[in-house]
Image 1: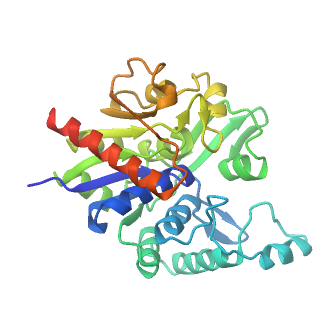
Image 2: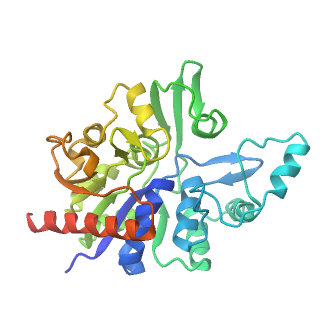
Image 3: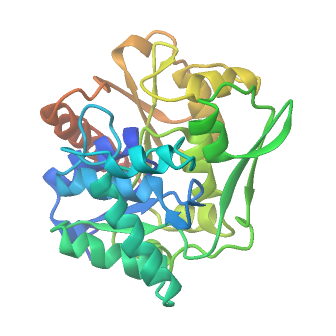
Length: 316
């Protein structure tokens, strides 16, 4: 039986770029994107799934290319009005974006699962690939700062990543069950590659890997595991990855990210800027242009990543 299915672990903005590239070169039924839900939270009475939403908008071609999150051609009447009423306006919900959150929250409160809602929304938006929440069980990322434990969105959006991070926790992860579709895929002997997208390893990928049995299922799949570094030349393309690494006592580098993933990796894609300093990271290194500014960049990096995985598969 040929291995055709690509399983991609992804957070939001950075991961969605590579997920889009993969979706451009693979048939929809050959790509399963596992979305981080550790960022999910309730706000203004609505259930928000930031990484799922970013992936959904990007793969549907309706994302805001300037911000990297939210919808294009967005308007902000709701936020202006809620602010005028003294409501919480620190987390920006555009008018078009708001429709998704309202509809998701309505369906969840009727008893549908997050994966059911996500699947239907993706179908309605014409997305061919499958975007699957890492779990239908509740997992929440929390961070310990000098002021104590804080929720992720408080840290990331309200406080703009200013607090120094001393520790991370993924509440509910050890009891959460990876979504059945993910487990079934990894057990099917049809997985061509497991791709770790260039998302923040701490707050986007580790919540996925922290679920009971997830790492074991990936390793048991027999598929090569290839990660793309989110660090270029010691800096994160977007977000607090490099800052968090330094605060947690890790080297803020492509090599530092590989060390964090440990022996899970078979292959590792790093930018030309990191070619000289990458050293031996315990995985086969491929040097490529990893900065994805354009659609061709996304497609090219997706091809490089799959080529690296296919080359590793031949060595098994």
